[in-house]
Image (cartoon, rainbow over all chains, first blue to last red; front, side):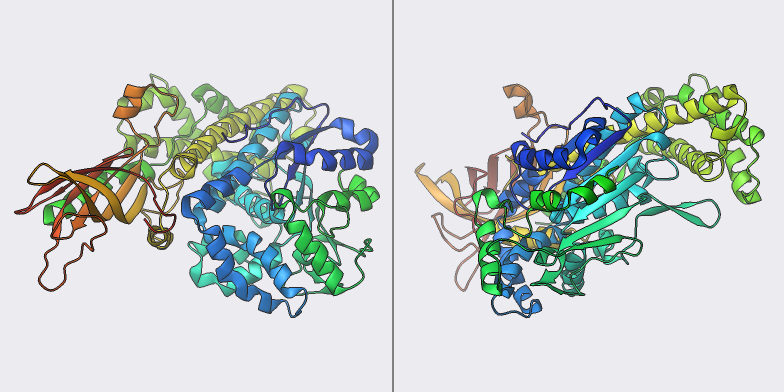
Length: 317
Length: 305
């Protein structure tokens, strides 16, 4: 049974959507993140209608129907060569395989896109009841890891296709801020370009076009972005975000024109070498359901929020 | 063989209009008419001086079309058109009105939305904003309904209980996603799926009425029924299964399990049609040693058969 769409009564004029990354997330897995956000935002938390979207069941549909996820990961083993590190490369490539395989199934990514779009639409419909002027609705998205890829694809589709009813000019749906934590958008873009011939309908992938803040033509000459503030937060120990042990990888680090870039100088307990980092990343992948949730994992979503409370509060103000 | 191929093509053709016809989406006519009048009021109240004449002209044209559509008797709404018109006409009319609506919404967002809130007359200001919001809300509700319908279709085709694919089918269908008939579109996934399987689970009665297993190579198309109702009763599910298939079955010269069906020197391949109705499969091998065979849709070994 797929998770039902969430519908909420907005306590104020603002709503926040959380989009998770790789792993078999359940609603309860958001608990620690919600607590960290509540702590970071203080009284502002009570003004937000907070939505969470779950889509891993759709990944499961395709994995069960095709038995192909493992096969695709093996096909992508060459990815380790892109990370020029004998100790970290294989571990990182194994994780990157998880974030690449949705681009190979046009139906998988279309279904996930529909799920996230449906939750955004429901959020705006709920907002219409309380804040009838769309210009006064304050919408936020906070996404992590693979969720950044899906969010980017979703917001590009929303801004460009009137079918979704979420365009910034015609429908006046604009996001105050979209905060992407440990975004693999550039990593996926690079690898997708490498394997472009294998990708069905590559033109339908927004990440294969030049990266840009999603927007809609406005008036005779202008463009109106659907996001007023796009923030990228990545730790310098987090390979999914484009860093390999404090070295920024230009081919993997997301740098969309107009984004605010925040690079966290990560100092995490027990990580003082490439070997220990490889151990933590590999261990995090092997935990229950593959969720990247452990305090000293540089990729941990809750960790990002906890260590950057002031900034998160500013972005969601 | 030619007849089977022809049947397959016709059947696929019957499937295609469902995926090619866009979902109808027009808000209620009275909301739309009020919106068009609000655009007129807004243009007169705060003339969009930065709008090129071509954009302004196009806006007036859209207003006139919506007025005409609204004045038609009976009202041109979704239900009345649905009763009267075949799907393609319905879609064309619906799309035309939806495009007029979207074009006017774009015009308002581009040239009027920033100035209307500053208009001194609250009747003008609030009236225009309310009517624009009404049509935006109605449009979003329709978009949500259509989006959930697309999502449901993905679930029917790929969700739990859908037919599992073997390795050959995974690659075949991944390749076919590039073709229009198999690619997802405005209505969600294509209802069609290619089928290429080696089935070892057919059973038949031989000439002495002894039960025999037969291994069959199947090639064909599976079609999903997006109006499938998982909660329906037994008889409804029997009449309207989640999927059905049609194709060509090939078997070896003799009955028996795990026999290679394609001909080799001194042997002959038996050929005939097969159909599936939900999980039930029936095949008929034609020729001197004709057979009627039955089986179930199942995967004995993942990725193989």
